Image 1 (cartoon, rainbow, N blue to C red):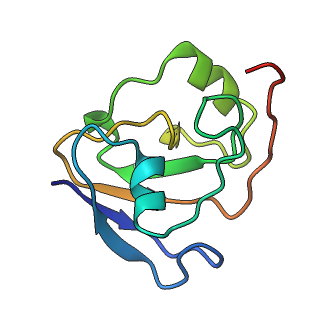
Image 2: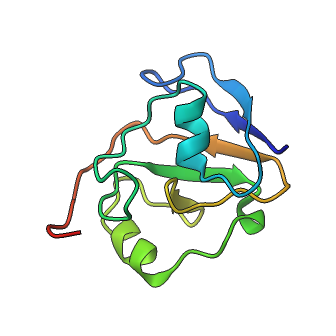
Length: 112
């Protein structure tokens, strides 16, 4: 199983941690399953940006971002080239290093 190293975040994971999750799981599901309660205002339906993460290592091992995710990411706070919506980023067999941004902006779209 891939290991996900979570960098320290003042609210969700103050000391940082490492978790494991099976391939085929989204980063968001892996975080929630390991009691890291990242926001996911749209219930993981790719309709907001609250689960935005920055994949510091292992980005290329994830599934490719679809256009809908990329359009939403354009509105995320602290967007970086390695940004993904954690609800859409599916784990493969490679380990990751993930940073949860300090802030989120909820730009939910209606009727998702």
